[in-house]
Amino acid sequence: MKTARDWGIAAYLALLIERVSQAVQLRPRPAFNPAQLRRFEGIRRELSLEVVYYPAQSLGGYVFIPKDTYFQQAEEVLEQL
Image 1: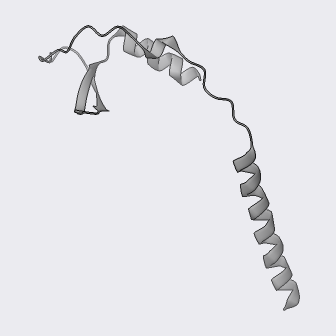
Image 2: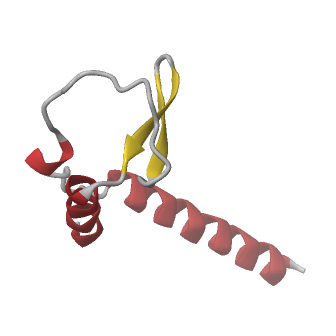
Image 3: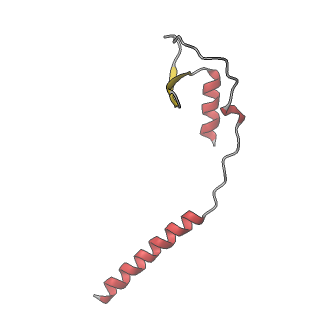
């Protein structure tokens, strides 16, 4: 019975060491990507059925961002990170 207890303690210590090593491990901070920003051209109140929109949450609620070429290029850049 003592060996089962020893194995339990060893497994617990191994898990604890793994968790601490993951917490202490340095991770590189993502670099600033200028593709994530674009000029504010005003708010559009009308939506078009010809354009695909992406719903995004903002401070004032949900907003719809048009999936234009800029949006698609930004998605491609973010997928490569």
